[in-house]
Image 1 (cartoon, rainbow, N blue to C red):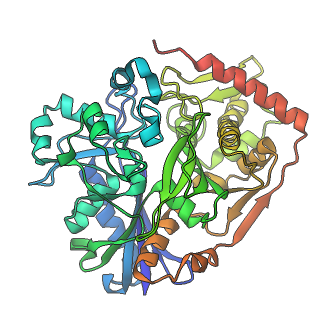
Image 2 (image 1 turned 135 degrees about the horizontal axis):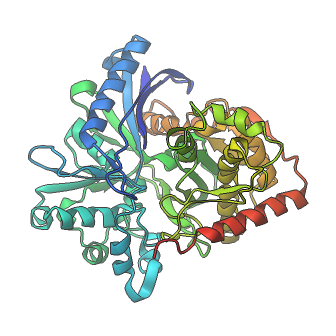
Image 3 (image 1 turned 60 degrees about the vertical axis):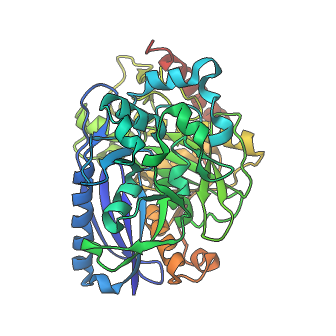
Length: 490
């Protein structure tokens, strides 16, 4: 028997099949469209995502020579804050899904903060008011499509992508605690929807899914997963934490994908952030208390490489950036701050926009490519310093995963910029693994957390080699470049 995982990400959907040793035996992936109807707006077609999901499940099973009867369970991980509204009676979305990167709720977020500002709901939710989160996105859709009355009666349903997929697979309307903790509608103390938050933000309780643990059974699938137990649901960054087996307080991982996300396991303690981080649910196993995390969210990491390829045409494929960047002896004093949708942690500046600073006639495409990669490492240092200040703990090793960790240049520069070792596991598909582990744990396919710990193994390690003075000089210039982005949008 095997376990499967639907890994529904920002740019693509994958289905991964995992054996009892934690080895991936098959994977199928398909991209979906990125829709940009206006500056700052990012949309997805939820029906297209569902069609892609069906396709990759079928493709991976065929690739492995398996059928659904070979699957003990299937877990789900998803792009978290991306928001879908659909009709309960027809299953048809009422509008395009608003993606987590979208900034159209900026004015609404400002109105919600009022005189109290971004921290109005932070005590209850662990989150600052920002365009990032799902609750204001749902409110925007209700307002602009005249749906509030229908939402009050439950005719219109709300969900993040995990909810949408579970509803399509099982007919149940639910989400797990990690995804619910990203809506600004769940109270971190009760792990339930909060009436005061729902009223303040303007999202009716009747349209919200049931909140369930991350590691639990949710029902049996229909259609493409007919009869298969659907079990295990985690937001993508929490799934990566689970897949990296960061089960002990103080352990941390950083995932380099479209964005960049560092999570620190804080155990059963909810640590409020005074330095621009998020307090979020790490995971919850059914029948156990939740595990919390501090998170630093960076909006643009791999998306910066895509921009270099698709918008500027400086490279033909994403993997070419490493060679181009490495061809420059240094960055030529060029700094790229990718504030395309404002800046996330630890700044939370929706008024920021991207800059390339330090340009001279000496600058060429090598320096710009290098600046794009270095920006990922600088942003990670921003987050790590905030995390150490909040937790009082110094990180001794950074565990990394995601598509960009194949870039050796970036990983070495990351180690140099942090001054700590950076470790990549043998299997870097930790987001999908986390969902598969959660599903397998829920049905007894995997025995316990110690069993999962035993499946992790180190693949490669990078040690810092940069002098501290040079590290601090580069980082100081990065800080000056970041300041140049502030206040661009009035």
